[in-house]
Image (cartoon, rainbow, N blue to C red; front, top):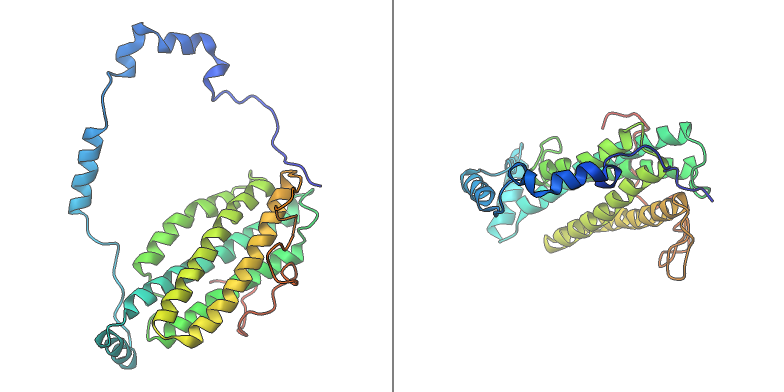
Length: 277
């Protein structure tokens, strides 16, 4: 079983590394340097003023075709919220694009680093990467079917791009270990699963049964991804499985084939590693 690679070293960030200086800093003679006791009222006032004056984070673009405009108008006349669905479709599109790039980065580390989790093969990682790219294309087609523009950045797509920036930084940092990279991916997969669940609910409310069917298959893929990544992460940090915990690459609560390469995604052409998506 692979063990975590973190090691003891000359980390001097904690106050315990310099007890004499710490005591002097906390002494009464340095009270003016530390600042007088107070509260965060001034900071709160500044935040409130900025919030009151701030605008929105973008908008949902108008359909670029007559058919799309007519379709959106009809849905809105019926009391539907097609703009909300398009916003969340744009959000998932942005997240799946980022997810594909995250697994590209993990593949690069798999090719260089040794001693990774025994249950994590390059083929499994590549299969998840293909799923993420396939999901991206599925969402692109869904947006176009509703008369939307998949190249437009919706407000939720903008927000999820900012949220995902930390994942990108972790996976592309050459110093991060496989265990650290898998921890970031585990967090991303948890968010990805929740995002698909929300999208399926919105598509169901809108009566988009065809979209619900395709999105449900994508959600099944994401369940498999989560099980695999969680198992790999546990193994990477040397965690001994306990009753009720998913074993490395395990499938507790999942279909019998959940540890195999996904095969149920929609039949669309999948860009290969390095493709510009």
